[in-house]
Image 1 (cartoon, rainbow over the protein chains, first blue to last red):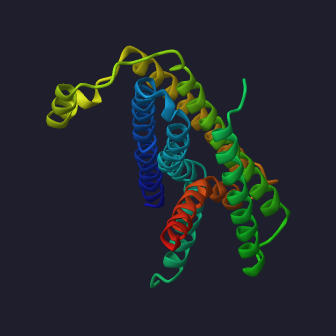
Image 2 (cartoon, chains in turn cyan, red):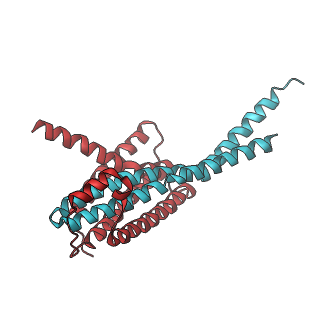
Image 3 (tube, each protein chain N blue to C red):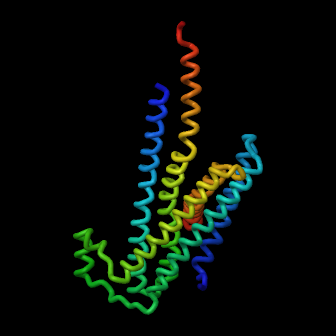
Length: 102
Length: 159
């Protein structure tokens, strides 16, 4: 039974990591679109270049943090969570088995 | 490649903010009694990568904006603006230069994410670094921009 529980847990971690890493796609697309449109605006109005660049840098940094957040969660789910969850589960199962009436 | 004033200025601001927040984070580790050398190294690694990632992103934006030097697009006509206001798909359409820039920014984003992923794996796997202390500073630039926005708004309101 514990093998099944560990399997379900690892499956959940892998699925969660995959879903979390999907969060990295959106900022990439959005950032590309935003920079492209801003560059077009600079092409139409070159005198606004410096102010557009400053605003764009901050906007891109804000957008990018969402991707970084997803990346961090995904990596934690792949590398850290399985080990922690399995040890918690094993200790819980050991305690539960010890309390079973004989 | 020359670093422009806007990039330098924003990077210095973000670096200063990240440094302050990193010191605060180390202070929190000290208060809760979890401070150790791996926390210090992890915090340094995270702060360096957070600022480095911001700088690389700013350089990618600068390169993209500089590609438009010498390119003069005609101003939008009223008909074009009205069509864009009615149809959101028309507003998303890009010129050939815009498409090229979008591709370069997306490639740069992918490379930076791979770099950060490698750093995160290193911070988790190597015992020299504390994983939490290394990963939390990656989110500091957003907090710095948020706080900067609040303080600038207050200053503007006061004036």
